[in-house]
Structure formats: structure tokens, C-alpha cells
Amino acid sequence: MAVKNDNAQAFKWCHLALWEMPKVKARDASVAGMSVISKRISDQERIIARQLIEDWNPLVQSNMKMGNKEDRVKPAHERWLYK
Image 1 (cartoon, rainbow, N blue to C red):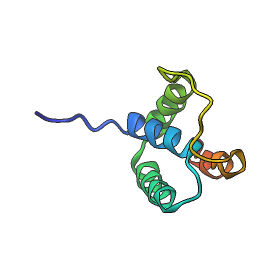
Image 2 (tube, rainbow, N blue to C red):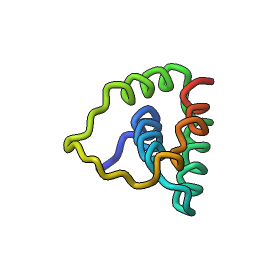
Image 3 (cartoon, one colour):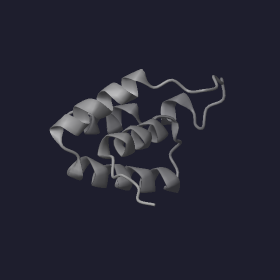
Image 4 (cartoon, rainbow, N blue to C red):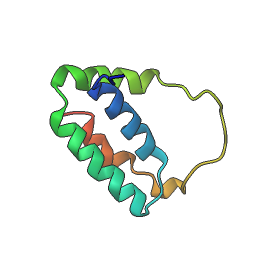
């Protein structure tokens, strides 16, 4: 079974994972992965990814977060949303 290479979906999931990830080694690896995806994603795929991120809703709402609010990487990884 072949898996379709979907840069927009990969970008969305990396972005969402980084959104709440605390400052630990795993986040460094995720940032590196996001850097790779951002280099291979087309402008059209980036637009699609932004829409996917905007439209995404978790299946279960929870007050639990992976990290502290001040540890979130939103400002740092926003650079991948826009070229």
C-alpha cells in the first residue's frame, strides 16, 4: 500500500504539534522536521496548510496542555506559515 505524500497535511500536523510543545529535545527535533517540510512545500500547499490549520478542531477538548503558556512556540514557528 502506497502512502500519498501530502506536504500540506504534514505541515499542518507539525505546526499543530509545535503549538503546544514545551521546550525540550523533542521540540528541537520537531522544529528540524518543520524546517525540512517548509523547504519542500509549494506556495499553493502553504495556502492549503494555513486553511487546514485554521479549520482544525480537536476531537476532544481539554484544559490539559503539554507545556506552560510561556513555553509555546507560536511566534517562532509562525515564520513557516508565511514565506
